[in-house]
Length: 120
Image (cartoon, rainbow, N blue to C red; front, side):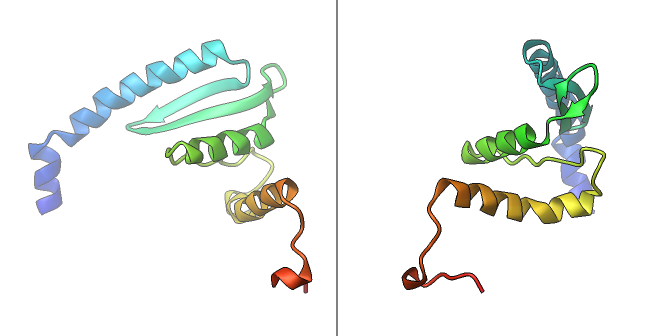
């Protein structure tokens, strides 16, 4: 009950509505400015942005989405890619650590056995 009292006394639902509307308008600006941005959606403070390589075919921009999410994380903003429609969400979520590790390994040389890390 205390949580509900805080929600009401601090008008958190109204704040989410106002801030969410502002964020949605900023999201619309991204869609107008960048061809990679296909569509946006919002529910409260939860926003979604569809990234597509082609707005006609709606080909998902999965790699670009992952790169954007990584850059946002580096900037201190938590975002995550979601399903591109061809993969179950739980499979995609399970693949994220592998994609991150793969990206890291592509940037750095493979560890040698004497470094204490070896393939098994």
